[in-house]
Length: 270
Image (cartoon, rainbow, N blue to C red; front, top):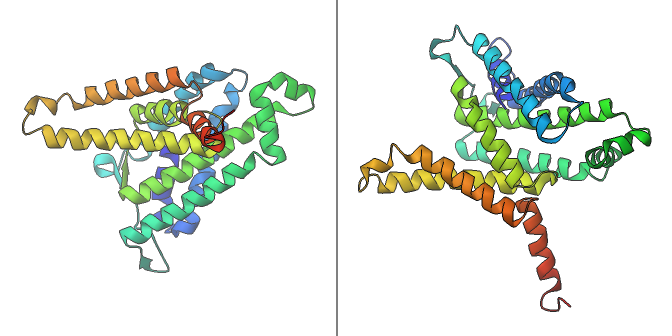
């Protein structure tokens, strides 16, 4: 996301001054290449070990981005407003543009599972040595998996940059990375294509904004609540993660499937 956001800033500013229809996919491609570069050395390890090894890339990327913007006053880099052919989008037009891009990318990733590429990725995810016996190149398909995920994160960072209008190093914090991974992916449901990520991200944003509203509402009556709000956020996120993983280890997407199956058969479940 950080790579996509900063790439958007650079590409949208002079001397490039590219429109958003070119900037967003290019930011995704740059993020995809970065993802493959940092992911390839980690291909021989799996599961949570892979997660922790690639986390090192976060600190390296943040250091590189800090070096890029070190001469910019206050390390704030501004994004050119979203528009086309000299016309600047209003906030509502920008929102619908984001929504259309999100739906198109959601449909694309949902249909990948039906393609030979998607079936190969599923096979490697289940039993990589069995996939290798069937003649699949683990290096090729794991690199493609890194590229696809990096592209999606880069596009997300590009949209994020346009939404904020500026980007700083503080925006790409380690806390954000853990929120995205733990709540957005693990709680949403790993390997669930669209629904897991969507449900996880919705829950994360809802809890974050709900806590902000609660603190701002109660702060006048309870002044001590403001300084402790960050601690409450961590505690509630932790409780949500624990509760959902205990109830359904495969996340919210699996709960949604069970809910749908229940009503598919109800009231004649026998």
